[in-house]
Amino acid sequence: MPTALEQVTKEAMDLPPRQRLALAEFLLESAETAADPEAEAAWDSEIRDRIRAIDEGRVAGVAYEDVMRAAEQRLMP
Image 1 (cartoon, one colour):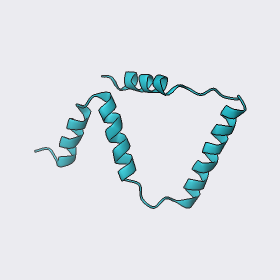
Image 2 (cartoon, rainbow, N blue to C red; image 1 turned 45 degrees about the horizontal axis):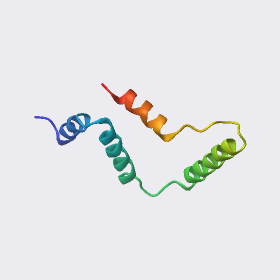
Image 3 (spheres, rainbow, N blue to C red; image 1 turned 45 degrees about the vertical axis):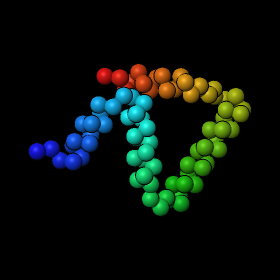
């Protein structure tokens, strides 16, 4: 008999790609615990560095639609 986790996983994998992404986001957010202050500081620094790189023209942003299209293509069976 499959475990509850195995059953939920099987059902989740049968969802359309967008719903799987939404489920993954929900699960990640629900699993957040008290954040490590050092990790939070590192992420804040990384975010600032990436914004600065875009503002200075060192890198180009990618449109949300393009990112989602690429993600969906990778998730399609």
